[in-house]
Length: 77
Image (cartoon, rainbow, N blue to C red; front, side, top):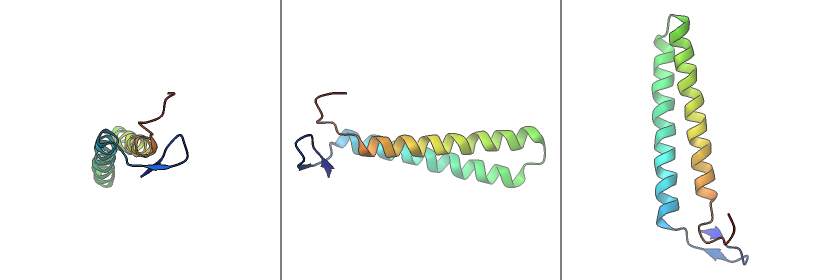
């Protein structure tokens, strides 16, 4: 449920739920790959690549939170 513009609870649209799941799965996958590759990294460029994947994971999770909080029924954007 999401809070509507009139202060009443409204159901989430299926698009908002789908977007949230896609962004969250992307964040989880990037976090797993970034953490696994960081464990095996021995050169500076491998460590930087792993850190970039972990940063991308954080951005994907942040985007998932934003899409979860989005109100599709709002009149202004």
